[in-house]
Amino acid sequence: MKTKKEPKKKTAIVQAADKLFKQFGFKKVTVEEICETAGASKMTFYKYFANKNELIKYLWRMMFDDAWAKLDELENEGTTFQEKIQLILKMKEEATSTMGAQYIKDYFNVVPELQDFYNQILAEVMQRFFKIIRHAQEKGEVRKTIRPEFFLAVVNQLMELAKNEQLVAIYDNYTEFVLEINNFLYYGLMPAPTEENR
Image 1: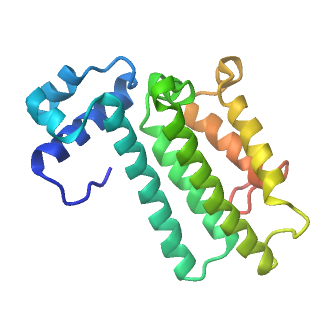
Image 2 (image 1 turned 90 degrees about the vertical axis):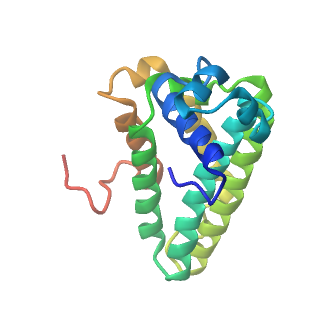
């Protein structure tokens, strides 16, 4: 994960937390473990983050900002809606492939202290995605009869599916399951344009 120009100790803490969270989930990892991995003191940790939840928020914000920067770059290059979707799918595949099962469970069963921030991030994502859909509709790349609000409702239902552990269990790994959900969301039962019939 890329980090902006920040003090070295802060960067070390962020990178250590990212590594530990992906490996063990963020609920079980302690501030002490993050500091030990980063080679930083707890005093240094609290200089930059009020608590572990604030560090989690920081990481999530970085993740989404990086993703949207890539999409904005595509937008400026005049790429098609289909190309944007392919990039989104690639980013999701890359993100989930580095996350352990416990991290994913923690992410979908977010603790109450993080719920407001999680909802805020989700609202921002949907608002920006609405803009992409409307722009694609103007260019004739997406059916004009599809209402973005309907799309959001479908996304919300599919996110609930992502919490179904019995369904997840029929796939080799969570990345494969996430790609199944996203391919279905964007392409329905038809094969994705770049994928051969399997």
